[in-house]
Length: 477
Image (cartoon, rainbow, N blue to C red; front, side):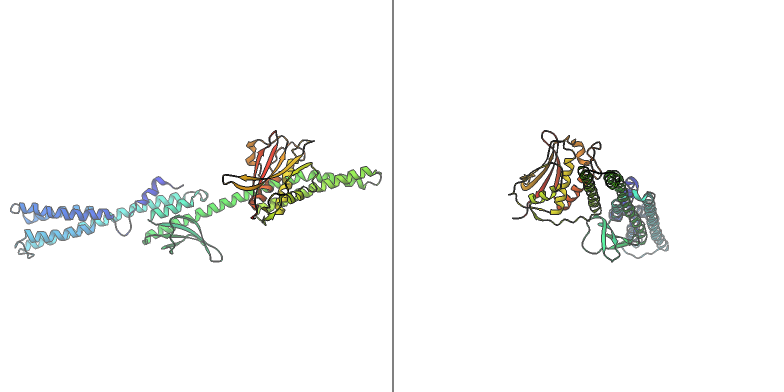
């Protein structure tokens, strides 16, 4: 983050280049002039015979210096001119006229007027120099805090907020122009109006900083250009960090995929190799039962290879975002029946024929049910079945009716603490279970359900075991 305790606060108080003093101080100078000069004149009239003209002019000069020190050039010049006129009118013979008789009085009035103007100008220039030094010091503090941070640690939103607060802008936005010439807002702070921006600063080859607010002087614009470059660097840092995260995740998936392929393909390939090699032996006479057993082993290993490759391809589609769901009214019983064809595990299906149609992609839903049943079968003890049941159910606080499809096993179950991570790729519920799979099934289930807009949730099975429940929205009647 930026140093909010120094540069931000200082720049928010930074004066404009157009004037050294703030509007409040100038107003105070005019107010003092309007009050002090008449009061001083009245006081000097009370002692008109006791003071010479030079003494009275020195008193006025002191007042002009105070007014100029408070309000700067404008109030100082006004006070100087007013003092010359008042001194001429009331204290220079002939009185109550602007005519001056004596040469000495003319010299005194002219010198007084010139000195008053010089003092006012010196005070104004000193105020401008002081304001410029404060602004430069604040800019250096801000830019050093921005430029000195690694690109990955810069916050784009904070840099834009710094721009908005520093220059008194209503809004600030970083816009990226694509190769086709279209522009897109990368980040913005403040209320961005519909009208075109009043300030545009190129931040990089493809990024520009747009702001709505007062016009800037040349030095202010130079500082804004440096901040725009910092905003572009912050965006590039965030973009690179996001790409690095995606690359790390892709590398993790590839590594896990290679590990899963090496682990899970070895067993069916070894089985295929052994069975085929046995059948090819010319010096062995196989009986019909032995030959059938070897062919069954080949078929089983081939089915396992097909399932593993299908899961890997499905996961790849999900990872690259190419899963497209064609949602249409389908019958749950028909889809479930197709999903259970060819499964060797004992399954009990209880799905009423009169259930209403649901909105889903028939192909994706079939794969979801098949993966859930396959996952449940691996954790179901011998002699027990996997139950596939469906019912019309009212879901959630909105009491919207849905068809709830449940795949139930009666195995050891899964601790609730593991539920949040079980849908990640390559997560195995039980590494010690033989043939526990590659850990892709539930990740594919989650990806396909997200594509169809179907909710999937884990539950405990009453009496022991694990249940996966799908909430399928009803098709319009």
